[in-house]
Amino acid sequence: MKNKAAKLPETPRGMSRRTGLKLGTASLMTSLLPTAALPATQTDSPEKEKAMADNAALRPFHFEAAQADLADLRRRVSATKWPEREQVSDDSQGVRLATIQKLQQYWATKHDWRKCEAKINALPNFLTEIDGLDIHFIHARSKHENALPMIVTHGWPGSIIEQLKIIEPLTNPTAHGGTAADAFHLVIPSLPGYGFSGKPKAPGWNPVSIAKAWAVLMQRLGYTKYVAQGGDWGNAVSEVMALQQPPGLLGIHTNMAATVPPDVSKALAMGGPPPAGLSPEEKHAWDQLDDFYKHGLGYAIEMNNRPQTLYGLVDSPVGLAAWMIDHDIRSYQMIARVFDGKPEGLTPDDVLDNVTLYWLTNTAISSARLYWDTRHNLPPGGFFDVRGIKIPVAVSAFAEEIYQAPKSWTEKAYAKLIHYSSIPKGTHFAAWEQTEVFVSEMRASFKSLRQA
Image (cartoon, rainbow, N blue to C red; front, side):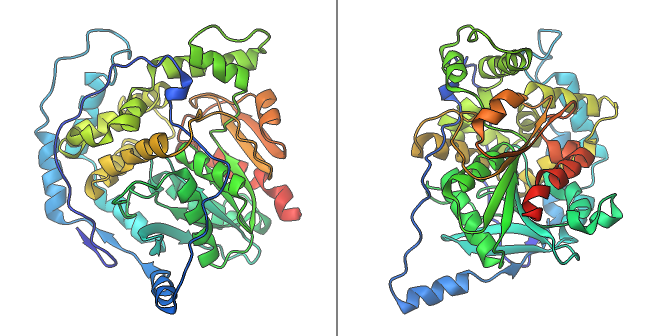
């Protein structure tokens, strides 16, 4: 692969296994998050200050996969060794053989990475070093003078590819049903260990340190007032930014809110019945969370504890694809329908663009280490536990997310809730899958902050 700014590291190879652990406690999910920001980096000499200034440079970035790597990918996809089909007629044993074989066939014969690569390279891509690590980001500025800067963070198993569809309507709203007052400047970074960002060589990169780095990035770009957005890990990072309250952060938006009350979190952790008195919306959220904790967390348990063991993901592209599409049951079922030829928010090319990015950058294991680092280096706490954010928060609750945050929980979780919307359709990948609705939500969510 070719890259005008930096060489991506070489990769190991091997084979994965899926853990069969049953999660009886919600606290076994990803551990988060202290409420204090990390201390600011100190400089103690002119030489060190000069080195930091040099590292702060924004370097244009361009990616071109080597044709030999693409040929090797296709060869591996075509040579996939298959197991027998699942023993059941539902999804309870994981990704169905018929589904992954349809994905494999499309990947081997129809998918064209160069089209995705061209879309990425058509945008302003940069690298900049923060705390010793190269951070990749897209910086798409609006032509409208009073555009609101927003940093948008992806999660796992996502990437910057999740956000490509929102760039044009958010930066150029007058061409997409909006007004100049709806415009955003967008900063879309790749998480450390993901995509084109550097791979940490030592522990320490987790939502707390990433949140601090994002504040440095926005300051480095000259933004004195901005907002943050994210789901999945992007929510964790955005909420920690809200806790750290860096200068200039006006508010955040999340499409995977952390609103679970303490009594509900405790009951989930015990694996028992729900607390009495839940409303229908709250009981629905309980049912979604209870099912996810008991049946959907195998991937997170493995990456929390043994990410380095997943060698098979960097040796088998189809193994990597199966691991990635089995994130949660509703997004998996949506993707399965995509490969059955049924209309959805994603296309087969969307799904395979994202998996191919992981493959070409060899980030299957480096991305998984974010789970381990968070689990082992931050105080324990549930991913969806309330964190006590004091700055303005907007929430879009999509019906087919891991859980749809009820308005009642959301109002209690966020002291300054400026927007809440319950969206009847949409899974874990809101910006990617339900782009038009997501764009409308961004415009509505931050309207009050623009006016202020």
